[in-house]
Image (cartoon, rainbow, N blue to C red; front, side, top):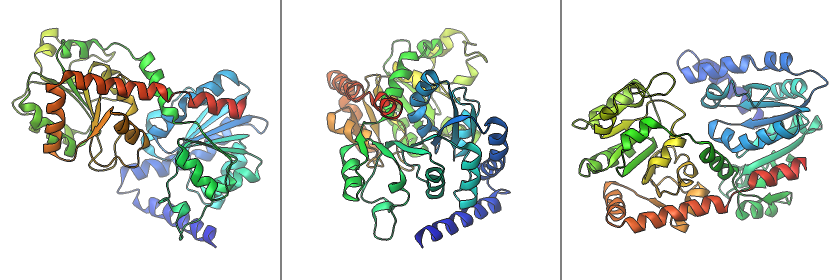
Amino acid sequence: MKRLFYSVGMYLMSLGALLLTPFVKKMRHQVKGQAQTYLKLHKAIRPDDRVVWFHAASLGEFEQGRLLMEMVRRHHPEFKILLTFFSPSGYDVRRDYEGADVVCYLPFDTPENALTFIKLAHPEIAILIKYEFWTNFVRMARKNGTKVYSVSSIFRPDQHFFRWWGTLEPLPRIDYFFVQNQQSKDLLAEHGMNNSMVVGDTRFDRVIKIKQQSSNLPVVEAFVDGKPTFIAGSSWQPDEQIFIPYFDHHRDWKLIIAPHKITGHHLAELSQMLQGRRVAFYSEVTTEDGQQSVDTSVLRDAEVLIVDCFGKLSSIYRYGKLALIGGGFGVGIHNVPEAAVYGIPTIFGPNNRKFQEAQALIECGGSFEFNDAETFKTLVDRFISQPDTMQKAGKAASQYIYGNAGAVDKCYNAIFG
């Protein structure tokens, strides 16, 4: 009965998305992309192809599965790789990802969609990243004989699977769980699922690889010019309303702001908040190939660099002394390990409780929480007045990341070894 209600909910969700397409651009992209999924599968996958299917909700989950995907690509060329996204924010950025043979949207999880998708894709192995558990797709995949794995998954007692009104579906149908922590393993075991292994978070392997591959950014080097630099990564307005006024009184520090939303409206808001400061925009001081388009002195004299483009933040963190990770006053914090791997302390707002890496970094002294302008001031004042404390926190952050690496190898060896 619960499965029936779930499927009815999926039908209603797909209908609602269709009705919203004239009004919501993101929904319009999603519905249009989902309509092309079956044609893409039909063209790209032959009946005799061997397929490994990776599914990620969005860009963050894609990054968690990326290294595993690349290992499969490198060591098992006999497989075609199918990569699906549910969110436009993931698909739009990675639609041309060369590590997969097919990149497409995952349709809404109705029984008919699941049946058609699995029939066309006929995956031999399905790897679902983190929270991606779609009842009908998993059921049809198992019916097809597909081995289904959950990678970097994490479970909490308050999730709907474990509430009195919820259902465990489709968890018992998963062949094996590669979970992030012991709590997740214990919780699954309490509900009769002993098919799990604690491997940690695959993101740690990914951010280490990103650091190793990160490039020098002459524009940022010219801007920083040896000055202490505060980096705000994926910042939202509530974050900006706290740290910008603070650094108005600490003008010896440079500011690099990479806002989460790069829209004309938000950039105008930022410019208004930064009135009186000498501001440079990344897109205005670089050419199309990323080279400097202005004299070095212009960058050196600027006090604030706004990164109004994508793909730079993971390399920019290397130039910071201290990093703020945005989202802690709203949607939840963004990618903390991406900054922590460079051995700098990270700070963020209060909405961080559901992020295991943030809690662990707080516990080991590599990350810190602030709740308002006053606690932010107390925290950053201490770092500025006690450089040794800031350095010690950065070292703790780096040690935590490197000390918890290796999840990708464990997953790969268990699935393909």
